[in-house]
Amino acid sequence: MRTEPTWRIPFGIVLLSIALLAYGLVIARYMPGIIGGWHALLQTIVYTFFGVVWLLPLRRFLIWMETGRWSPPE
Image (cartoon, one colour):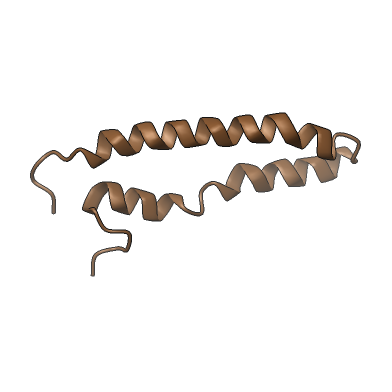
């Protein structure tokens, strides 16, 4: 368990905010041009997928922020 403050938490929050902003801007910029003519139900599925896919690396990133390692402690 961590008892001292660490630089990884504020750095990780800033990095995560920048990464999510960039990811959202890329999706908002390019996806409408690609799937704009599709049926609304298909668009919903695609946007839901891209709205959830960013969560996949989040667990390991949060573990790194807390422990400094990429894998969970044993």
